[in-house]
Length: 529
Image (tube, rainbow, N blue to C red):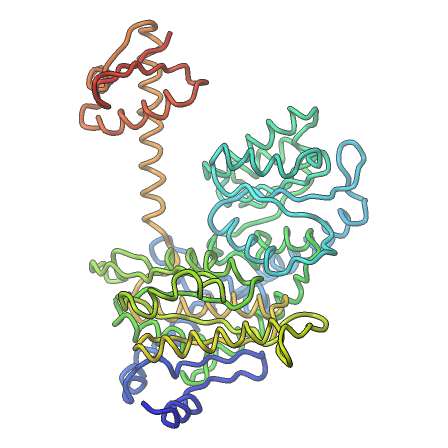
């Protein structure tokens, strides 16, 4: 394809949405001339399913739930007054609480103003807030934000060390819909211990975001925490950024939550268009289908050429992979669907993995995210007539060209800036694209049975650990091999798990398990003195 042909293709397929300041270029995707005709019936069915979802249909049949994240930014779409009022009231409560904290009407137990936020959550309860916090932070933020987003003790210690003496002025937000998520529960207990070690009480510094009546809800109520904000069963964790999950920490940080909601609402309007070539979310879904043959045969590489959007690929990993990675379709057929997502930022990618993208295995398609505005304020010239931002733009165009010349496909999303409205638009754009793609491949995008399977497996490992420790303590002073311990506690079929648990126990002194090395790694003996 010569330059003029490519230009004509670009003009034909560039999707410009002037009303929201977002353009989507699919001209570097090598779909056939009749692709849109072939996909017309499936995408129109996807439009119909999306309309039903927004009207309150049971769009998550496996769990018998509605799917209502679109209502969060336009409550007038909610199917009844109760949900509508809950959405509106929650947003107002978030604004009032943030104002009370910023003004000093809500203070620490020592009467100090709050200056930090510690967000405790995992998955959607952390990835969205982290992305937004990183994307929109400024030197004038009202509060500094920290995260416990795992159950790694060393990671927890690292965050606490960063907070340091500021813990006394730190407001902690615990986010868990059920209240039973172990990683979040562990983070809460670690935070509580840290407060107590500093001579503070946890409860006067704590806020909950959880489902009404949940374990966490009851804990917060009994402990008289500062506040509690709702999570609803019709909002999944990976689509919860524009609920209290994301809006509360953002409001406390001092970010423009109204702008995020407005941007998402405007993008929702654009992505309701019933003409695929004029609907940016439909175009993304169709290109994902084309690239992977409707089976996720190629990975999605996200390359935002903007430091503020560096965490967008991590956020999209959960949104896309948890939504689309499914063993069975809606008809219970085994299909093993999914799209793998990874990414870096430009032009760091130029010095990281663009070499492989251009010349290695062609098992991917790229999405470039181009931000037109370089910065607020003037830029110096690093060369005559050229700024650092000009170079960033040049690297994006150059990488895009270099990949295409070697037969590598790409999409380019262009936005005007990286402000609050744009962040809301990007979130809404990909939420809708995921929904459309799920319809195209006939899967339930709104449940996560694989995640639940992993949680159950982890619980069984902890159960085995308890049996091991109990056996060793009952036989204090006696050493046992892995085989002997597995047999004694009745889990011969789980001997590898026993071995791995003993390795971990003996590496951490507080468990009191001692390892006596043998000739080989499997000949060691273990005891409690």
